[in-house]
Length: 405
Ligand SMILES: Cc1cc2nc3c(=O)[nH]c(=O)nc-3n(C[C@H](O)[C@H](O)[C@H](O)COP(=O)(O)OP(=O)(O)OC[C@H]3O[C@@H](n4cnc5c(N)ncnc54)[C@H](O)[C@@H]3O)c2cc1C
Image 1: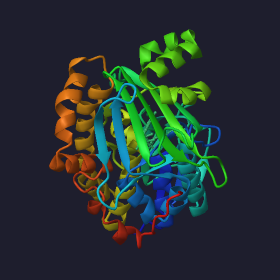
Image 2: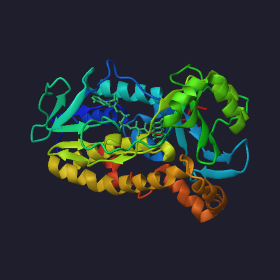
Image 3: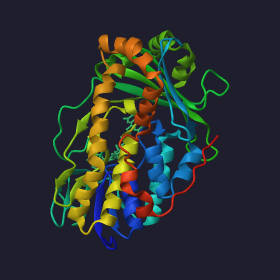
Image 4: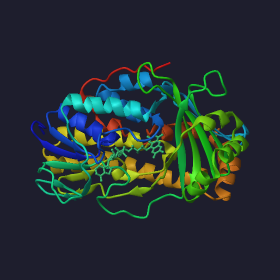
């Protein structure tokens, strides 16, 4: 269908909302993007853009500016305490790699693209409901309604107030901090490294490149923490934390010493993607997981591309929504399932699961065929989610990739 003049309202200026707004305005839609924040901004530290998410960004010409700020990641290695036995070693398939980026870098590029393509922003707009229908609207917390739209999208993330809110908080979250990358030290620039003690302790260092041209090279340092232990951690103070870090991973102590960590809680939930007629959820508002498999931002980008491509190829909005669900539902279900199964092996109080991980699963994952399956899982490529979207047909030619080095 022609998107010229289609009125679209999106709630949530995160990864999914910004990407979708940019795509739809480029096809001629009139997009208004609402967010609760006074001024849209990035929240969080850094993450890995997998080949799936990278292909979506390439299709809309935004991969280059993001890749030049990020760091190419070729391998993920997880070891037991203090440089011990490797129990996870994931390499990308030949010719593929992840791109680790600071959230602020991805946000700036997406926000600028959305603004340049003509998206209208409404800040300080806190939404708590949707009225679906031929002319759908958002309902704000003060009871006001947004202007009627042909299509409304909930991209408000895991804490979206729309739809059912099952008790979905996971028992473990993590402290996240962005710190200067320690060049010449114990860490490699193309490696995501993790250390584990059972499943109750996990730390990681991810090189994430620069926030903008000329800015210093940074790393994300994360430290898992039972959510109910956060207050105890705060009270115990930095020296107690440094002591715990030195027992798990002495090389990471200098990073923890200068970190200003933020505590993140994780949710695992899958909501109904269709709110009602002409009202749909994308990204974490539809499917949130722990970041263990590192797919969330990539999934939000895939949702945005899928909905856009479905609108372009279908005859009307109802057919486009049905097509979008056919393109995305199996992939979403598969990763929700895998994340639910795998997260407790890395973040839980279980003694059995990490023992199985270290003594049974780790040796199996070194087998060639199994290695290839794990690479497919990590790249997000299980069930070929990008091929289904026919991106080049919807968006035109793709751009090349240059990664900051
Ligand atoms: C600590 C951490 C680490 C992660 N690491 C990775 C990783 O390595 N790889 C990966 O791919 N993913 C990772 N993720 C997941 C990833 O961040 C999310 O999956 C992704 O940001 C989801 O995008 P989204 O657009 O759906 O929602 P979000 O990016 O969460 O954006 C939601 C937006 O909605 C707005 N909003 C919320 N409520 C309202 C309201 N009531 N009214 C108006 N606006 C509202 C918010 O202000 C925000 O701007 C991680 C997540 C966390 C928490």
